[in-house]
Amino acid sequence: MRKNEIIILIGFAASLLLAGCGDMSRYFSMNRENHYKKGTKLLQDGDLDAALKELTKAQQANPKFADTYSAIGDVYRKKGDYTKASTNYKTACKTDPYSFRPHYNLGVTYQALAELSDSLEKARQFLRKAVQVYIRAVALQPESFDANLNLGACYFQLGKTNLAEQQTIKALKIKSNSATANNNLAIMYEAQGKFEEAILAYKASLEADANQPEVLMNLGSIYFRLDRIKSALATYRSAARIAPNLASPHEQMGVCLFRLKKLDEAFDEFQQAIRKNPHSPGAYRGYGVICMYKYVSDHSLTDLKNKALWAWDFSLKLQPNQQDLIRLIERFGPVPPLPTTPTEQAQPTAASVPLAPATSTVDSQNIWQANPQAAKLKPITN
Image (cartoon, rainbow, N blue to C red; front, side):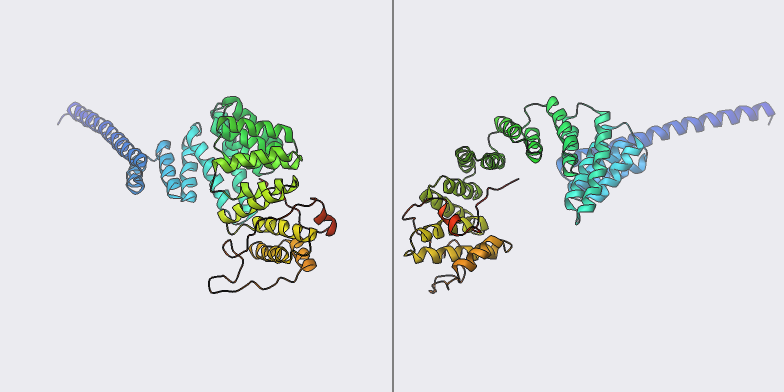
């Protein structure tokens, strides 16, 4: 064969090979896209195991496609495997440093890992990592409400209250009517002692979404701390209306009514709290205070004294570290044995603590004057 013919044949073969490489490249690209599309569809449908298989095939077909790693991270996050989720999100971030979604999702995953940590130091480590990736996410997409809001939450959990406030305000500039952002800002204001600002922020949260009993409880707590007892009472009543099965509004209403010297009504609210949550130490505590209060006013009411001691004793069983109740029992005790019948339990639960209606009212300061170390009822705090 002549030299020229050999050269032509080699060139022809090379062109065939090159054409084949192009076809193969297109084949692998189409293969990756097919597996990726199937995987993301299965992920949306909630079939996580099948989605993972398809996305793994897509990743094997093209190990440099960031979206595949991000989608695999989504699968693991939905499965609750936050360690594998973070590994895949980190790979996606390295593969495409300018992609917002994996950075944001990595921050969410670090927050979840912080919440699940078995020590404060580990939690703080994950929160610091979350801050780093959220900062990157906000740089990539400054108008992301979620990234700004979550960054503010991480700052707050790390004790950086000023930065948290600033970041949450940025989120509110993006979405001013957000119930969550206004609530977060209110909590930050409250932590700084900015109570009037906190009240306004809580109200803004409730204007955005009135069905938030926990926000109403927080707002009532601030009113109580500011000695605006009637406002606190009205707020707790609103919480009780929208969350009829919740015990804490009734417990806090009992506290407020006691402060307003409305003992009969306070007594009823503590009863309500016990019925709704038979394991609420605060409800038994308040119930006991009302009973003992009446006994201090009229020492002939020894049955009320016994009821107070039973209730306080059970409150201590539910929450042992209440030194003021221990001192009260030492002062007015000992705790008498409960009356025993075949139907009564050995401990004062909601069914077995005698709940009698109040019979008299007295000055709200008397019990504290009689016993300066007496338990003081406090509202629930955040």
